[in-house]
Image 1 (spheres, rainbow over the protein chains, first blue to last red):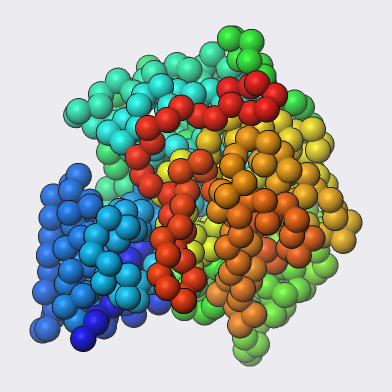
Image 2: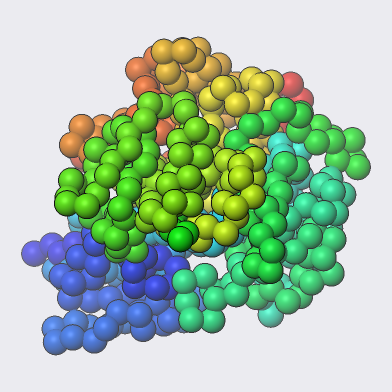
Length: 263
Length: 263
């Protein structure tokens, strides 16, 4: 008997950002598989077995989930945000590709979720109003040279740049370097968001200038989504309250030229 | 008396992808403002006034919504997908910036939604497993030269590329040009998704090669999200069923070099 596997996006944290489809997948699961803090978000109930694992064992965790499904279980692999964006979906398909041929008969579904950049943008206003990109700053899985080449291309294209996994104890300097690179191309007053734990009780949204962000890089952490504005991204003041941040939909100027002279 | 304005993401179309928070904003609204087909998705009820408008009048629609809120109404501006991604949020802040100073006292909230690329990715597997970008192909609001410069940068960076607004009657050739540009940099067998109306009854997901996509560009339409794989994006076969598409999380090679010699 073959079970099934659904890779479920839990959204940023608050229950009212979990889609009904994702909730339904959790409700029928016999087994929840995932990184501990995400598994903890799913309430206990009779008949539900939870399999929590540490960070950075994504493919082992995915293989375990596929094996449970092959044994007939109804498995939900849980991710924060959207499972397709720097989360468990790719790990499951990597495990599937490398794993037992029989696993390919398992029905696999991905249930999308609100990813961190959408939540951060919503809280700030409309900073993603133009073209944008999403880059994981982690160099666990790609050389740092690839990260910087991608950052340079994104700066040349004048994308709004969303940085996932910006900093950790093992990677303390990468965010500072990335922001310094941005400051070589974009003006110092360009808005930068440090959006921490959006949708959770300890949510904290900071709107900095790029100059301030370079100096404050070490105040970000793994729960922070960093968003670097495009050249047109700007603030709308509203008295004592936090300004709105938005990127106009129209573009009139060409992409910027970096100090290296690349276009 | 000041009302309020919430910019609500309805997701791609199916009700079970609308977040509870977005639904709650619809439930308390006195006025729904938006492009006709999105307004139509909200059921009629006593006390609810609907204001449907044509496409391409976003700022006028946004100003009307702000005026209603200033008059004390509880307004929901509705967008498909996520309101912050090529949708109504930026238009509302543009109207706010240019509009009456008193409007800045209106409480404005953005309720995020599942944007088309997340829905398309979920249906296909995990094509967004690596770094990626989102570009609107519409040149209504930016010169075509900016679009091509951004595409070239995204190709050089080896991003997975999501194309919103790929084609319309007024813009029949842009998608073909964009795919030809991609074919100058990426291999002909690179997977390309044409994900049409994901989450709606007429959903249609096509997995093409880049070579096939160039030839089939005119089979896309305004309801299609086009996703061009990175150099590492690949398929997992599963017999008679549609293969999965996924992008591994690891990157080993450098960004590609285009035929123009740019890196």
